Amino acid sequence: MARDERPDETEQAAEAEPASSAASSSESSSASASSSADARAARPRRDAVARAAVDVKDRFSSRGHAMARYVAQRVVLKPTIWSITSVTVIDRDRLKGVEGGFIVVANHSSHLDAPLILGALPRRLARYLATGAAADYFFDVPWRRKLTELFFNAFPVQRGSSTATPAGTPGSPTPQAPGAVAAAAAAAAAHPSTGATAIPSAARRKAAAKVAARRRAGQPTVSARSLLERGYPVLVFPEGTRSKDGTVASFKPGAAALAAACDVPIIPLALIGAHIAHPRGSSWPRPGRLPVGVAFGDPMRPEPGETPLDFSARLRAEILRLKDANTARILGPEHPSEGARP
Image (cartoon, rainbow, N blue to C red; front, side, top):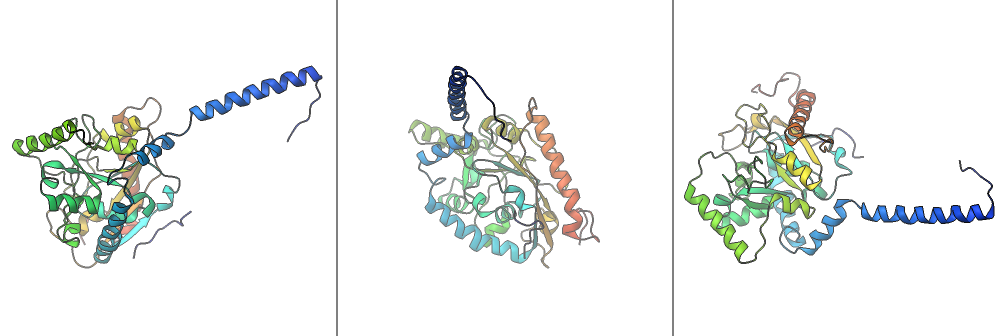
């Protein structure tokens, strides 16, 4: 049973001459009008992206698709993962003020990672969360594309391209693999993948040709940036691949750059124990409902003058802090190190 370790959530009088009062009133009116104009001009970005999201009609904005994902994620995927592992969710109430577009970043060490994130996020935030999936594999066969879209609200990403990564900029994180567990739970539902290092050039050319054909036909193309600008959240694993031993590798700066470009917050979270419960290379989690945890941090934004590399390093440091602060609570005092094997 998952548990959240923090509960969800003189007026002064003055005399003046009549003429002076009139002047003050005029100045006050002007100031009020100016203030109103400034307020209108400085409306939050989320208002604009919310309107854009309403204007575009596709599966990312479809309530019908969202309902189908609800069934796939909350009726099939989450109960399966929660029944084969012992999940603890920590500090979910830190997300109370989050809405619209945002980026979820986490450490990545197991096929359990994305299912855990989807299940731990509040439903209102997970409902439209999108994940980049390798176009040359997960979108080349109709049945695999449909299952990937259904369970993970996936959008195609060209692997091996520096301009078509989820962040849409060079150096961006590559699409990730939410895992084989959900595939089995969903009758072989495929997950977004990132671990491959050798992608056949022919496959890349074929996928790129499909995207080019869609553009020539005037059909919309989707990227992490376009989704964020429409007000939809995106999941990114900045390490670029799963860790072999649970250690957190350096972060690619794409997610940090994307947050700055789209003016959206990043939600850092630490996944604890997932690589022990379902190690890399295994086809199914270990028996015994081993403990795993999801620890949320406060939403973060780049500081003035901060570069994407510096912001990315700060995100990694926060995730490491969350891991260090919560590992003993998740794994127990007898296993204070996440690298320990039960």
